[in-house]
Amino acid sequence: MLADLRRVVDRFGWAVLHGGGSGPGDPRWSYTVGLTGLAHPEVIVVGLPFEAAETYLNLVGEAVRAGARFSPGVVTTALTDADSPVVFLQVADTSRLAVAEQFSGSVEALQLVWPDSTGKLPWEEGHRNPPHAQPLLGPRPES
Image 1: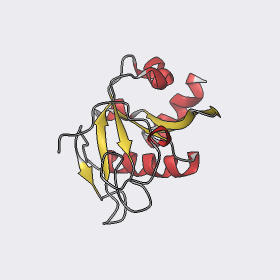
Image 2 (image 1 turned 180 degrees about the horizontal axis):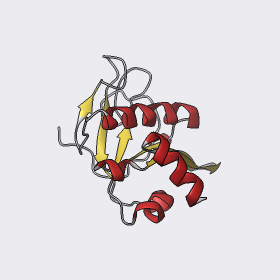
Image 3 (image 1 turned 90 degrees about the vertical axis):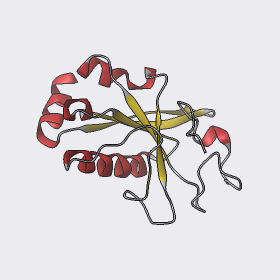
Image 4 (image 1 turned 120 degrees about the vertical axis):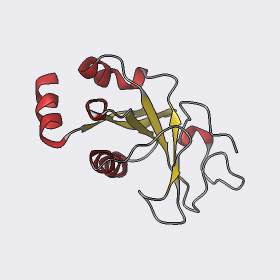
């Protein structure tokens, strides 16, 4: 598996892997493998359908390959509509990124936190999704 992953990363600069979603209370997650080689933390997104998560993560990968750098607390609409910002959080527990760790050694990771259908982030008043839909893997940004 790591040899196949290496071929994908060598060709594109990163790969996207998926996990979770095996039952109630187990949200899906998707994450990059290979951004470490581009001098950037890996990125994980939790709670989205795999196809949507892969779209976000490929946009992140393309931006990083073009020179963008994301860090904890960065809020951006560069990956979304102008009224639907995403924010990056430092991931405290990287256990969901086991393959990335096997691939690159220890890794740093950021969580891409996505907004609800009204453009609100999980900690904002009026956010419509339940907390278990997108567990936060690190501290939320200071307001």
